Length: 167
Image 1 (cartoon, rainbow, N blue to C red):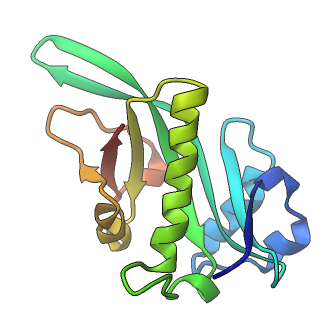
Image 2: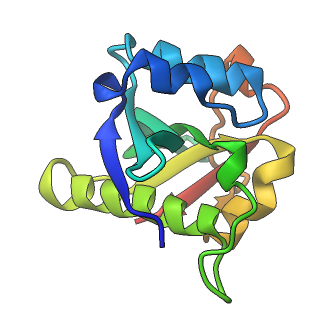
């Protein structure tokens, strides 16, 4: 079992961020940018023994718009903007039934449940997955958008699969 802390990205040193590598230069760069982005809330998982970043997540307030004929309703949501694990932790097993990545992601989901219960009501958790990670998110109970849900449109999500998780 890894002894870890879950801390705001703003509390993580630039030295730790500089050696983080998830296999995607763009996601590695995003970790550093999140420290200074007021629109995104970021958290890092720190391996307390190894003194390195296990992974990070970032999310922001969002909404899920449903359309049915002429009716259009937007429900409060949180969008997981980024979720990445350092390559050294990506293929580890947590138990016979669970990968370490699933365990860490469950901690992200627990944090979002706490926000829902204690801060502001959330109806959905949204994310836009790269095609290679869709099975990971489906394994963690996310579903593909249904035909009456409206996708966001911005450059970064081109080619990504929109997924949601109802709370």
